[in-house]
Image (cartoon, rainbow, N blue to C red; front, side, top):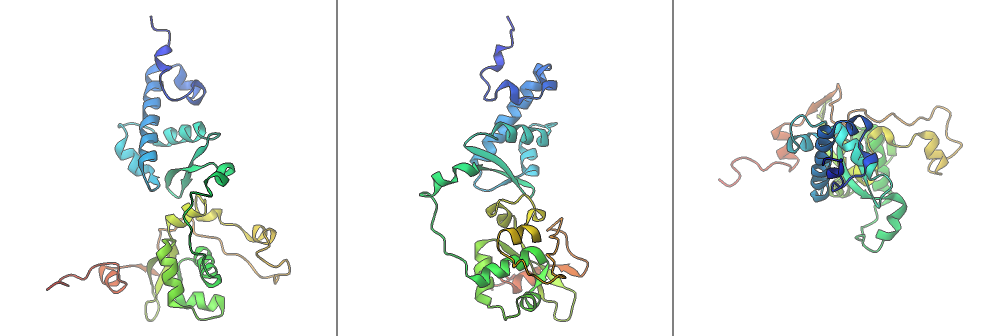
Length: 245
């Protein structure tokens, strides 16, 4: 006799599945199975997984957004949470349990003040050139500082500015969002939050403002060109063709 208990072996509680699907056993089963598959993919991945990548591996006609929303709700009060960073998703230790992981964390080299200043400028002002960074900071920028930030994977070469000399522009990466727990650049703290955290003096000039971060960090600015293969070779990001001849 079919009394609905065939669903009790599934991994998710009844209250996780939307009420609309509760009245449709086939849809309910499809959603639960898609949730299990997405959960397996996300747990097995060492890096955040994009919705596009998930859609390519889940059954056709799967509503990936609905699957992720239900998984996120399912894990909301558990030891790990499903979080979105940019257009990608990953499991992270619940914020209130982070102290339990302190002994497992790999010791990392602390960034210098110069590197932190540069990272903040790039995050808020991108796309930004080295000369513009130096103008904002008021001091010359060391190449070693840029190299350090590049090694962390938090900044990247974006393109070239359409000005004399065509200087390279810098921007942040998805790894930057992931490390600082941001879904998008617009989640960066504003001027009031920075003052509240003691990072800005309460007596800042009246005309001081914090720029609004980009809505789409991958979109090129009007005065910015995409990097070509030649540019990538010059920047050491692409192996020169015929280099072994």
